[in-house]
Image 1 (cartoon, rainbow, N blue to C red):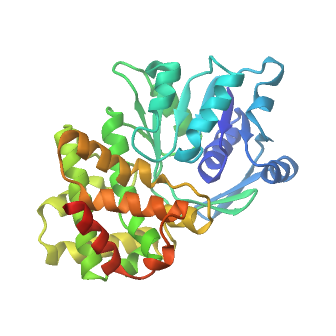
Image 2 (image 1 turned 60 degrees about the vertical axis):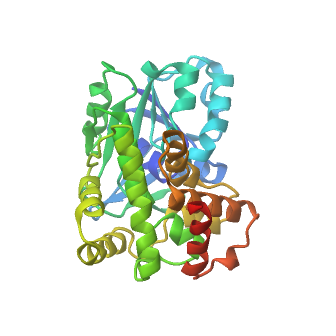
Image 3 (image 1 turned 30 degrees about the horizontal axis):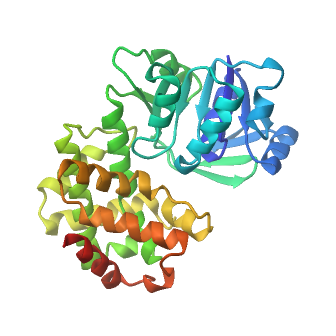
Length: 348
């Protein structure tokens, strides 16, 4: 099978490498330096203590990908969610009628621009729970076992079994979800734990959860997200190796004294000493943040449905303003009280 991976960072590289290992002809669209290393040395993947060298072809632009009338059987779009619209514009310019597309980005509604452009029948939503570290430009390390990929159809009666089997045969633990809304909202729920707060306060998630003030805000944030899901009749589901149902049950039903140590352990063991994605984008001065597809999406849906979401709204707006330089990051550095003050402004 001819497969194009558009956005071959850690996730795209891992999936593309596994498919290449299975014998598929895989082309990765990636950065020039990364492309050079992969073409010269191959792409190494370390999983369960074992390293394999895969041999996908790496190129540097979507124009190269479709040069000379090249066609593909499948397109993986694995860029950051905030880069997807630009990637779509480039794709339309060189391939107005692309092959089936699978997305792997995080966030709510990120597939909608693709659906509007190409139709729901051509898009499959994906969520990756496997944490992958990019050790070098040509070496990826799977940091936790027992996780994987979940795929979901974007419309009823859409068949995705072919794609589920494709990744399973490539050695990627893959499951199918019936509802893409349940999959994407449940994944977002898991992603939001200790993410925006860690970025805003410039502290590791485990440390943040030792603060009673911040712990209470985090639980309220999750409760708001669950309220918005309930209003839309979106069910919480588990993803491969990630129990969103347990998280939701704890937030909804457990007393604070019982939930706090469990949630603190979850965020500490889940991320360890690693800083979350929102922080990394902020620290690298990318000028963009995926918080708008997580806390921001909860706030937008809450406003539309008449459900108060002051914590999510504050988290989103503060992080966006820090990212764009409208607020000084130093003002929030290690200061939960300052962030709590912002939340109060949204409660009025």
